[in-house]
Image 1: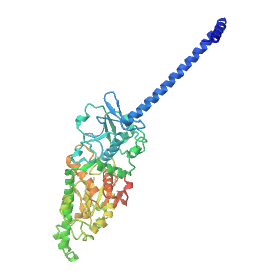
Image 2: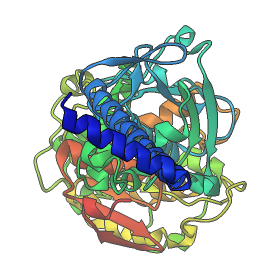
Image 3: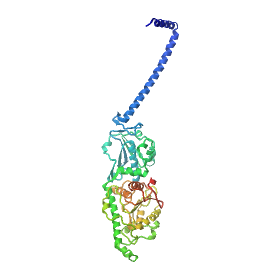
Image 4: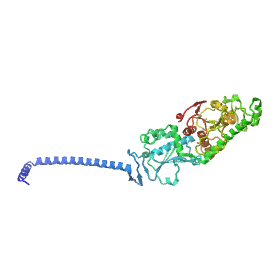
Length: 480
C-alpha cells in the first residue's frame, strides 16, 4: 500500500473520531440502504424462480410426466394449461346412466347420449353408456367406431361423483363456460341427463377448437353412427317388419295382374281379394267421423287387398322379391316407395298418464288429406304413433296400403316395460330412418332423431312436419 493511501486513511479516521455521532448516523443510513437492497434482490430471485418453474411446466405439458398424489398423470399437449387434455394412464370416464329410475323417453335419452359423446371428446374421457331400463340397450345396439362398453371392475375403487341433470336441473352446469375436468376432477363422473348441450359446448372457449362446426342434425347423425351399430337382433326385427310390408305389396301386384278392374267386375274383384272393405270415401277427409271399438278394429284387420278402393300404382313396383329385404344389414337403406309418418299425440285415451297433449286427435284428418294423393298413386304407408285411436283411423282410411304395428302401445319412458317394447320403439325408429321415401314427423324427440339419422344416411328430401292438423315441408336445418 502506498504512503499516500496510509496518510489518507489516518486523516479520515481522525475526522470520524472527532465526530462520532455523525459516524453513527452514517452507519444507520448505510444499514437501511443495504436492507432495501437485500429485499429487492430477494424479490428478484422469486420472480426468476417462478419463471423457471413456468418454463419447466411448459416443457412437461409438451413432452413429459409429473408425479401426482397417488398416480402418475400423463400430460398431453396443452399450451393453455387448463387441464382439459389431462388423462391418467388408468383413463377417466363419463358414464351415461339410465339403470332403474325414470330418465325420460327414447328421444331424450338419445340426445343426452350424443351430448355426452361430444363432452367425452373435449374432456378426453372415455364414454360409457349404461342404459338398462327398460332393457339393456346393448341388446339392440353395439359399439361402432367408439367403444362405449366397460368392464365393471375398471370402475371399482375409483374416485367418482354422480350428477342428475334432468329437466330444469339440467341448467345447473353452465356448459358454455364450464371447465369440466376442473369442476369434476373425479375419475368417474356418472351423469343422468336428458339435455342436448352440443351448441353450448361449441360456444365454450375451452372447447371450440375441439368440436366440429355442425348443424344439429348432422352433429346427431354422425355421432350416433360413430357410436351405435344395429345388432343382428334389431336389424332382423326391422327386416321382419319390412318383409310383412313387402308381402302385401307383392300380393297387391299379383291381384292387380290377375283381376279385371272394370267397374262391372269390381264386386268380383273385391270378393277375389278377400272381404268387403269398410272404407267410406267421404270419411277419408273427415277424421272426426272415424270412430270404432277394438272389436271393430279386429274385424277390419281381417280384410285385405281391395283393388276397387285404389287404382293400380302409377309407377313400377320397387319391391320385386323379398330376398333383398332379408339380406339388409346395419344401416342399409332400401327403396320400397314407402311413405312414413310418426304422429305423437301425448295425453290421450291410450296414454292418459301423459303430462300434456302434443296434437289434438281431432286434427289428424290433416295428415290423412296429405297422404291421400300418395296412396292413390300406389304408395304404401307406415304409421308409428302413441295412439291406438290414430292407428285405427289410419287403417280405416287406407286399408291394406296402411301398415301399423299390432303391438300394444306403452310410453317408452315408464318403468315396468319389457324387451318387446324397446325392440318395437327402436325398430320403428330405424325404419323411419332407412326405409322411407317420404317422412312426416311430429314435435317429438323420437322422430326428430329418426329424421336426423335419415338425413345423414340419405339426405333430407321428402321431409315434412305435422302439427295441429297441418303438414308442411321442411329441411333438416329445422330439426331440433
